[in-house]
Image 1 (spheres, rainbow, N blue to C red):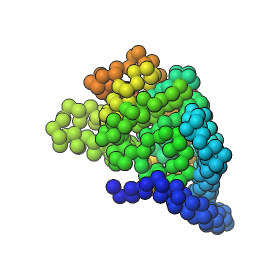
Image 2 (image 1 turned 60 degrees about the vertical axis):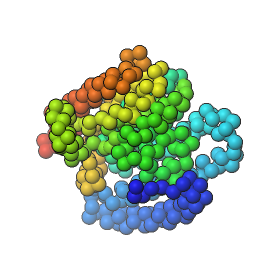
Image 3 (image 1 turned 45 degrees about the horizontal axis):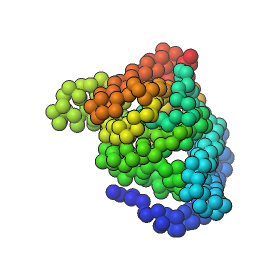
Image 4 (image 1 turned 90 degrees about the vertical axis):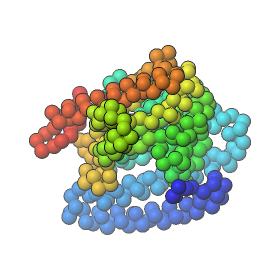
Length: 353
């Protein structure tokens, strides 16, 4: 596929060392852009360019910090990964959590980005591995969900991600050491990588969380329409009508979830829905929405004990489809509440109680 990442040895010996001076130069350029944008602030009251430039600086600095700290950890304990894999991964999960906290704090100050957890917190307890199935929509949801797993639930995350993220050196190193799985498939759901996801699920230890996005890609209205058309062209009218009725989610690609749940019958499952920023589906919309004051990302989760979750393919597929109907209904309800509580001239609000 286009943009295929080079082998790990090439990334570690060539790409990663080159990234350090390149990132430093980019930071200097962005600081100049931010200074110029600050001078123009009286003409641009929303200061979008200044906000974006400064957040990019924070992100690049975070990424450099991840890369440098990972190298230092390896130099101090070059065999730690083999000798005590659990402690090795916990140390990297803590590093990732602290780095994402700094990024989220910067996003809150610069963009007004904030997260509200709706309902009672759900978790199976830190000593039990869980599989987390999350809706995928809007800007920054992957970072936010991983941040919640690490900092709020104190989990060591194993995430299924697209291979392109390995072009980011800092994230590449830390997520690789956390035993995350990178999918070369453009589907993102990994239907053609189901066996690998099942194997990944078998490696879950106490305190781990395997994060999957069963839809395979970010929800957008366009992708939703295309999914309906594909089903109609395939002669699957009944399924197309069901997908069309669930306007806030994409049809799930169950193969990866089936593989994971079949491989680990002892894991609880947490379903995660979120909304609030999901209607910002392209860079232009995000740009026009800045700052995001009054538009929080709201997150809701439901825990399903292991004994209540089917473990056969047909049962998992039907169960997952029902859960995604629940997710769609929750998002629909939140949007209706937003509309009812919005001030005149607004379409969203943050006044949900």
